[in-house]
Length: 372
Image (cartoon, rainbow, N blue to C red; front, top):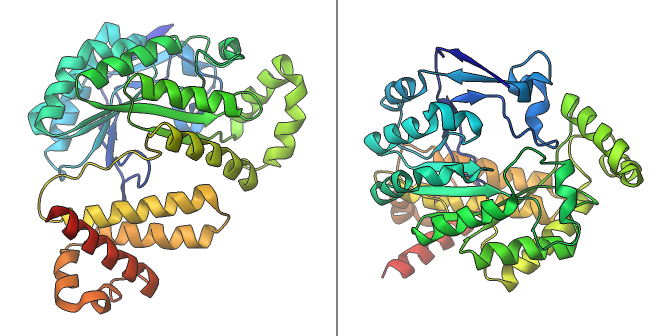
């Protein structure tokens, strides 16, 4: 393992739209490139994501943006206050503490944060994250693909040999929950024919509930480029009986067949309902001028993801997603439009069909009734 220190030119990634229906981030900022955990299914093995010429460098060399916090402070001052994905707490963090410094900047600038972690090292910054949560909002999710109680749990060593034990991640989740911070499980990616059994999915959701997690966000395994080659080589060596199943399931495409994912997501839905745990992360909206737009957009984004998860209607999902992003970025208050022109006014908003306009009207009326 080697560290390459350098002065980055920028650090804040600014997205055209929030990551609607998933993490809800508008921005992201990460102080390290490369990852010591080296999980075999990680999409960043693809060199176009990691920035390395050779995929093997991904775990052998960590590039360190030594000026990360200074850049973040300057760049956050230039953008509206919305959710930002921060940090990572791999081994380099113990040496450089750049993720902590970036959190300190978010606290100073009153930006809400989202953290997606595989390491319990993040617990060292629990008190700081609690201060951010008290001032605005914090959500700490843990990447977990199997439960320790699952019969085939020992197979995890093939996929996460350098990552902290999953027991430690659940323990960290419990600590964040006790501190009053929103936390839960990122059940992604679900590995076909290895950790996609009903037994494992139930165990992950049940354990999340037991330690105080509030959501289980599930997603599929995508495969392409160097990452796909590496993953298939692992299967060929250690799971030769499932390799042909993968080839049939993916058919040379980026994602598994839709019918398979619908079946898996129905299992997730079944056990989330049984254990009374959310399938989606609730959106935090910064109080202010266009908060009504954000609330409506949240419902439409979630509807788009639901359609993606449980049907084959890509066009319908796109329609909801497009309407959601349009409303999320409006420069006027959708509530004023509704109060002056009712549903007819909503239909004049670009990408809002008559059916979606009616759903928006229902959302607004429901929000009003809940506030009374």
